[in-house]
Image (cartoon, rainbow, N blue to C red; front, side):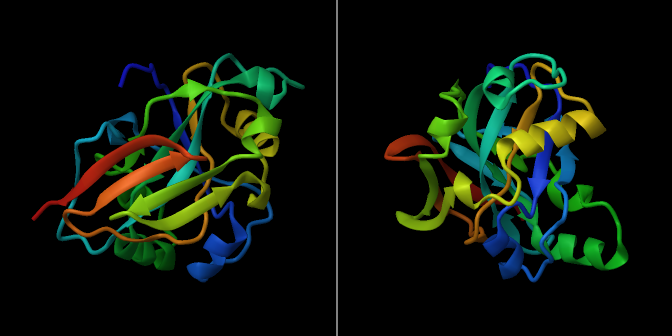
Length: 210
């Protein structure tokens, strides 16, 4: 992974149907969490190792933005973002369920090694253009998720403004922008493929540890 990545921000519950499928309320403001950079793993056609023995691991496909310069008040997404990729926010769902009941942070469920899978980056074509393209995740040649940015609860401009105001946003930061409905458990040996429109962005085979 050649890109220099600083902070990894993630947006939770940013698609209404995904929130509903997990029985969650629709947020009134962006729900932001982070992952350590040690969670990054490249989607490069090979295998991705995921933890075993901690309950189900779920896939969550997402559009990922790379920030190309420091945020300034009034800056637009088109000025701020220089590249996009597709990624998977892997989640230990059983662990997360326990954490939610206790009111504890999600880090043990969202921040483990390999939990931030990422394709290579491509030039960002602009906000209007990306809203016209859907992305999809296939598992074992069957489509399991399809994302359309028009279905987001909080659009890209709202997301970058909110993150910048509350946590800061600068060159090299990346944002996982939320996952659409269709998340599910990963099985050992599953083959995943990510598509931006009709263009294949990356593939990998999942390996679940003992």
